[in-house]
Length: 112
Image (cartoon, rainbow, N blue to C red; front, side):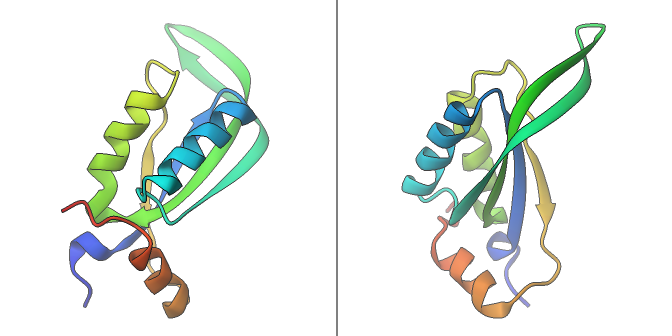
């Protein structure tokens, strides 16, 4: 069994524009807070904000990293993200190709 800190996770983060998404993705990968970040452009989001139903276009980041680095990743996203309250949701990876999961572990800081 892998240590809890080396478990692979996928973190979802929405960004207001593709340019912001690219800047944040590049920062996370070059800082080794993530092994890989996919940018999914063209999302339309509907949500409650400050008591009103809001709608906007966004880009979604799919960030592959390890659970041990999550807190540092979360703090870094908060520091560099333009939203007051950015979406930062971590999902556990239950199964995957062993070679790929090892690659994610090898290319992400463990948060120690």
